[in-house]
Length: 168
Image (cartoon, rainbow, N blue to C red; front, side, top):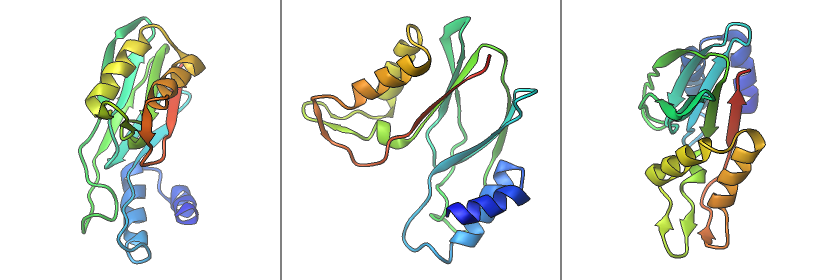
């Protein structure tokens, strides 16, 4: 997957085109699996971004001047390799100085707890939004991980990836 992605990344600059071509190339070599992802390209000079989702949870963005006002960036779509003729939707977004963007894999809210069962996306987003009010940078990431994996964690079913981009 990595080699195919790298080759296509050099060829296609549109996230949608890259994912469409990745799906076409991988459909014959990966059997009974799927790929959930969000492809994001950011122009660091203009802060313009393009996103394309393939079964990925929503991204969260906010500005440090008003952290109570969060926004979800999302486009409902199937993961790659799950349906024939995958079609993506590209989203363009203009970031501003002071904005933050939080990306995460679904493994962060698919953790099973001893007493509460699965965390779930809604509970995770509620918890995240409350943390955004008081935390930033590495402290936010550490706090999210601390809540996800604690003494009440029964089982982790999937990988966990967190990424926070702060536009200054």
